Image 1 (tube, one colour):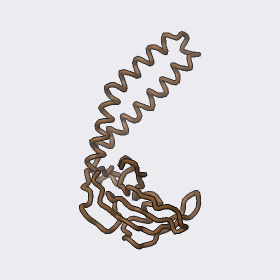
Image 2: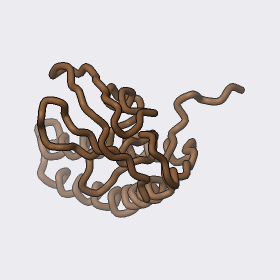
Image 3: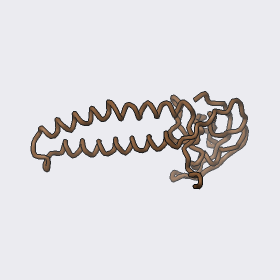
Image 4: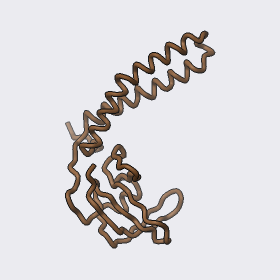
Length: 163
């Protein structure tokens, strides 16, 4: 059997956060949803009960999230954060200065969109911006195209992230 190419790569912190979210959804989340469905059923005719149908829709979305989390956690590869690096790689905090004179922007460059850094936006290495900065060093200029136009930056700082 061949290895799945899109194997999720997570820091230990992200893995733990997702495992906690999964446990919460499977216990309190399902209990709360069952109670909400029971209250909605008590409102009468289900064929015309908008609250019941909305709650069923929310239940379906919650169950889809549970399945997604189970898959991610089952398949996840735990990656170590880089200790020290001067290159923008997955697991680093990258500060970019827009070449058009705007304020510097700081991002977490991550392998997975499930990674989070408090107060920062996550940019995956598969995204247009992530691809542009991946492997680049302080002082290098990068450019990427997005639906809103073409954006140019200079990398001004790269720091290890303690995920």
